[in-house]
Length: 371
Image (cartoon, rainbow, N blue to C red; front, side):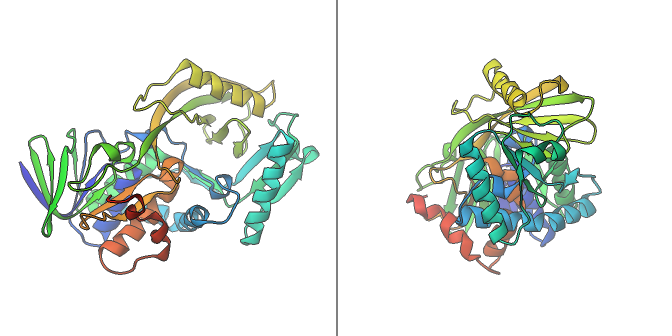
């Protein structure tokens, strides 16, 4: 079967779905293709963290990108919900980051100073004030940092809403087949996927951890590597944690139904997506070191996903250096959900000839050679 569209999006994770939605709402004909259902890769194992200041402690393109992404999230979620009719759990109740060592306390001081320098509220708590902010916190916490602007979004609901909203704008989704080859000939991009032949004026390579396995004709493999992250799902017995809480060994995302998502491991295990006893043990140990010994919960489940990392920890966003009608949108590592709306907007603007944001220069594929 042969399909044609203005744009072919390869990959139906949160990045691919957000791009498809953004292009669709601008009137572009889009087909999304993936061998799994939308969001079944790294997205399904994401806790949906929206916390840019918890990822870095210095100025640079990574911080600039994530901060600007968070600034867009209110409008992004509101628009997706309106266009889809799907409810999305989205909370900006802030984060509490706990320090249990002198080194981590100094880290909190640096992060707090960085946030305040950007005009963002960040309150540094002494040990005596931590229990007031979070009664479940372990008494061994030396300090805490509250950043009210942070929050989280339910990733699985966001995917559902993006697919529904994109579909209402005419986007087609093809699942159950994997693209084996992608090439540009003149002004046409062709992708082969089993018996499917897909042609488009442009293609977007958003295959996440699998980006390097699908090499654009004439290019080198993208230097994207999988990093397994395991996520634990608990149910609080009694009061839940009040807000997103970070410890030295894990983070905790509370939902209003008493659920608590605990993440996430960082494992270089190749393309193995299994949950493991070791991973669950590490996360449970993180909970035990972050919360009081009398805090109780039951186990609901666990899942794992492969997050796409890059050598310089920055995403790869922009046109291929050798096939300019093929665009990359990959390598978002632990911030795929947070960076989905800004990636979609940046890429749509650039592809449609409206504006190339200067921040994309640090993320261009060509920094890795003939990509």
